[in-house]
Image (tube, rainbow, N blue to C red):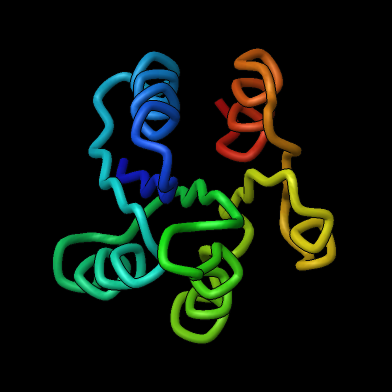
Length: 120
């Protein structure tokens, strides 16, 4: 299983990665700080194997957003939209029509949401 984590806060990116590894065991993690990096990973996945889950912050470095990643997924990998989770303190994120958890969220809530999304 491959999971893409898009988060500009390095520490939070690593914490989310550890939680995902703890929940799913042998999982391949790809990490990105910006929407541009995330989209590059998604493009490469066509050759390397598709992602099973995308976890993205809404507000990212360089003025980019998780909404840009979601827009790209909707256009190029629509099957992945159901496995897209936004983490945000921004109210606009909830209006995008995908699962959204308000930041900060506790690990129990994140774990429960991921379990539900991945049926584990």
